[in-house]
Image (tube, rainbow, N blue to C red; front, side):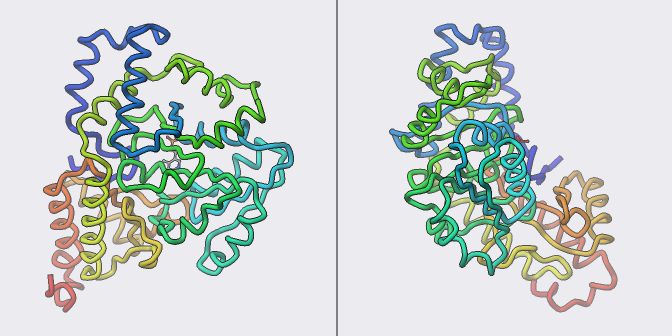
Length: 366
Ligand SMILES: *Cc1c(COP(=O)(O)O)cnc(C)c1O
């Protein structure tokens, strides 16, 4: 089965052997405060730093999911009455905003990033103390292009960035932001149940200044523990072990970044020649890691059925784009052969097998 689902997504095929190794090495019943476990955590952090090019003065920590990170930020990183701006362009960013709203009584503003709204951002971000962004919005395949993102990353306000569907797939301007986090089951090609958090020195300072300690996952508790390469609760040791192995196996993020952009370019130009199926996002806001394609609900439901019969899985549409879109992950764990197979299938489905498109001149160009 070729899996283009953008999360949970295709895991690296080596995971099977790594899991067997984890069992054979006794990793799974290891005490999480023991020397060997602390060594594993320390080495994993070091590998992430190296492969993902995370600045030396940034602190890494582990959590269970991106959703947990939304909560950690709301409970531990907002001062009383802090002005928080959530600028979002899809369902995940919006859900994050609603968590912040429910968990904190702080002054809070949402801004849906329609193209018209972009102009307002520098002004609004200027007034905010914390700005929350989702550089790659998994629900609709939109992204904040780097020039926009860099403009959005304010220097005085703290920035929090949900990079669940792009960390590990593209190079991120880590040093320009403060709180970065991602679940591992998307771009990192791992099974779900672990998230990586990355904090700038001033994000760490802010967490201690606020000093919120009422929760098992209060950021101060997490930080106290990670200094000793531990976690407040028993962590997903298998997840950390697998992350360690995958970080050893993958090339440096610069190599992956080049491949992701090349493949994204090829995917988008491929769809220029496919009738009745177009990227939902306009060209300057397209994600390189998650493609969201629009067609009619009828074509999409038949497409998914036919794909399954051909051992292919595409991602369902999400939220308000559920019926009229499907999604394709452009994550590094997918091979070039799998991508070619996906394209052959889609070309055949949209161009050849449907008599109403058989004479479509666009298809003949393929
Ligand atoms: C998938 C996803 C999440 C949720 O991840 P969990 O591991 O289920 O918490 C959050 N944000 C984005 C951008 C995502 O793609």
